[in-house]
Image 1: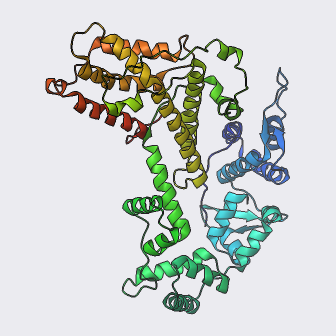
Image 2: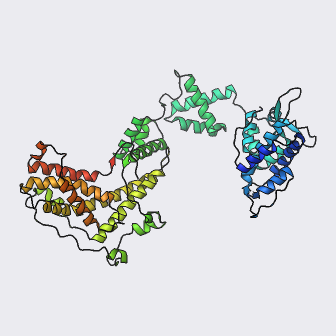
Image 3: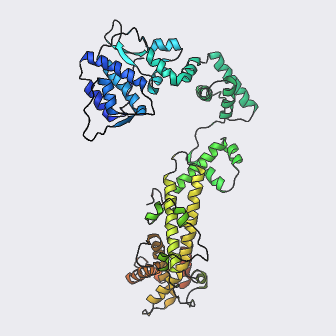
Length: 507
């Protein structure tokens, strides 16, 4: 089997050298082939060699020393494949003479002597067995030959591979039929899967597991009216994966799912993880980046729990302020909203710490999601993502609850100069301002010179001053109770963060 290998050069410098050697006279190219073969067998894969040394060994010419006395270093593991390509190119361009001191065999002759398939020799060439081209007797074409020295060198590192290939024998039709008969008997006598039968027969026969699988699979495909495994199905469909993941979330035992879908535990867990990964990839959330997120000790510094007796740092002391004084009067609000607008506010340093932790958890979740394997996501990585997102969701809820009283205070301030009855108008402003509060939490950067309360107040005042034109007139005439019910629904919906948007990517 005389076939050229279609593989590129690994070292650009050796690729350039090969193009230059192709212009040498024929006798010179024959000498360079023999030099390259000797050099190939002498190199150590883990050592590095100067490019000047490689050029000298191939050509006998020592390049002039560079002005900076700097020579490119190449590792032997990358040089050897390129030397085999140089030997291939040069020997193909000339008529290599036979050498009695280094006899050669064709691929077919070597395959017959070692009792292997010619395709096995082709695989060995990719693994390091060098070759050369020589004229075919009484023919114009050249053929690939394997020198005896090349085989001896390859055998030093791959002797076990040669012995295993030589010991391989084809399965005769009688043995193939015996495997099929035994597999059918096992499948009918016990409740076993395709993989379990194939694994059992592989151990019994001494054959590779994939060989047994191919025999059984080929039989069932060739005889669909008389298959061995009647309940064997193809890969799980997307709908089946969704059903499995939903059942798992509802605490359905995995053993029950294996019996229901005729799959192994590994297949069921793989489907669960793939569905979980697909769902979290549809989540859309951004984070405000910070240089401290890339520190090696970011987890220990940002996510640590401060103790009650821990004094604030100098940077935090500048931001410490008393909680904002809010109007305690809730008489004009429906009773259903009292619990959401009477939460105690937080000190500025606490808000700053929560915002840093909130954005870092989202950053960490994005990093975990980006590193997930596309087809084989690991369960522990998915659990780590869920843990980060759950903690971020808790912090976001804390910030929302703590700043709803500030939202109420700014809304009351805006209504001071209005003559419209404040009950319905106040609730409408709260409904208008709640998305502003949510966006402020997502977009605020701790690098700003103002604290979060001032930033939020300014955004709310600008939003209230601009008015709201997206509500139809019929909506504006609704009663205060209807508006309160809609606002309460908006507040509860905020806990469903983050939203699942198809194709959205986090920052």
